[in-house]
Image 1 (cartoon, rainbow over the protein chains, first blue to last red):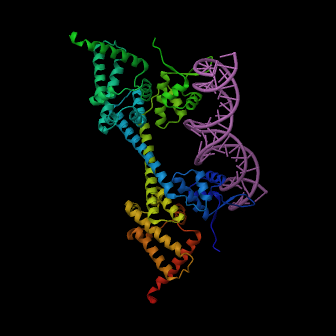
Image 2 (cartoon, rainbow over the protein chains, first blue to last red):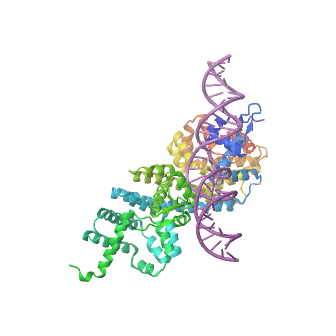
Image 3 (spheres, chains in turn cyan, green, yellow, orange):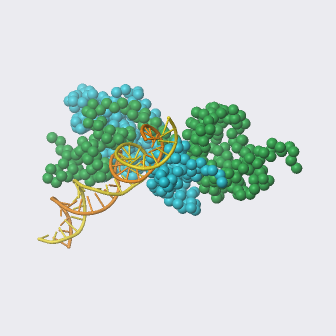
Length: 260
Length: 260
DNA sequence: TATATCGCCTCACGTAACTGTAGGTTCAAG
DNA sequence: CTTGAACCTACAGTTACGTGAGGCGATATA
């Protein structure tokens, strides 16, 4: 008879890199139940338990829950269409990967932006981060409510384009916030607001604007979308900005008469 | 005075995409505490609460716990170093991505193998999966204990090479498991064992084997390493295999005399 | 007017995979 | 014989919610 090596739980924990408490837990779950010294009640782990633990860890790595693993190990046949199950997990993982990759590029872009821009208003930052976070959701929303063409225009921009747009966005909001409080008919304010609107249009591109103008979307839905995209302005700033835009619109319609 | 829009909790939940229960929870935590209708006790959310929630969600996205976020929002100064935080979040995501990519390659390789090989012993499968799972840990361990050269040889293989190796590995273990039980001096067994050893050497490459032979590693450490790499054989199979190898070694030293 | 259905409230337990801690027992060494 | 490490059980706590019970007040319909 070959002498089998036996380990106390501490020794076993060191060897496998799994904490004593976790081993207790796995025992409790019926996942890895070692032999027990009858008199002392101490757990006695064997070489075989190392194998079993490895199996458990492998299955855990594949994304199975401990409960599922326990069932698998109980099932002596253990031939649960492994290919099917693996394929399922594969697609799940691939989706997860895509999601993460998008977050990574967006965050990298934002870091770059912050390094180049220095101090940035915290509201503006939140707005940027929120955009990162909801970029996917936004795309889904738009694809559901608007034509695919606009979505293409909006999201098929190169990373440099996106960075440039974000920069422009930051600059404008910065300047606007700086001018906040001045009368809305102040020429400085008016020219900046004009630029702001102009840039917003440029951002979309003309065709997109046309399509967007034609597409009619529910009031409700638009409000829903607005809730997803937080404004970089405070309530007060926003009110002021709206007044300034209103003023601009009024004047631009009769601008021909009064461009002194 | 501008009329501010007010929402019941259900309406607010729809607008923001956050569940009612979560809003209750945030209220309970003191994270997002809305106004309350005194008579009914109903929560009344404002536009400003949308902003605040956006801020919360942004910070949550960056990986902060709700408790931390609450503290941040209480702190009126609120001067978090965003570049640092984003970088931290970024590395977290990159690690997550790597983990997922490893899982993906592991599963893809395993699926390929299963399709090409048909039935595969579950122990062998676990061994394969476990190898990929612990690839990093193994690499770290080896880099700590052995020279970097070996590590390079071992890990700088292409996916095709790895697949081919896995196949070879499966075939050999399959055949060995098939022969299990036959006497160790059986010529079939002996020739297979010889091939097994030969392949093991080929896997490492000669230089690596030489370096590995020279490097002396603690008994303890070797045991630690072995616990990390599960064998594809059962206890019994392993004993039998060891005997067969021993027999082979004995005979090969005096093979010149008896190659009939 | 009765009633059915909302929307909302609070309270409280359930989840996954552990981790922490208290208070007691067993083991190994000096 | 004592001391300290290792081990035991048992209960609680963690995060960020999900789920469900039981109840209240308002509104819509028969």
